[in-house]
Image (cartoon, rainbow, N blue to C red; front, side):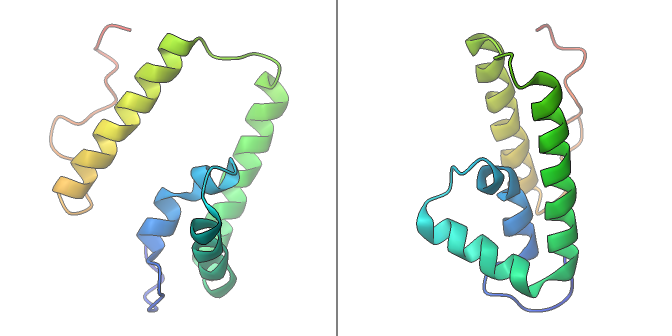
Length: 105
């Protein structure tokens, strides 16, 4: 996604970090970059609002349960793999980079 305007931090970079931002896991500089971009960019601000709402709903529904450490590790590993695939293909998911539904859990 890109709004077509030039920003110091790109739309793609901001949207890739939106959950890290929502979780309060960015350093102060990273938070400032994301906040500044959201202040300038309506499309990203709307996407942020949607992601924030999803996070609140999930937290309300599952807030008292913690994911097992092994599951958390697998999910984070898969996210890193997908991010690597996206970077290596210039923004698109590489062929065969599906959901991994056929892989054993």
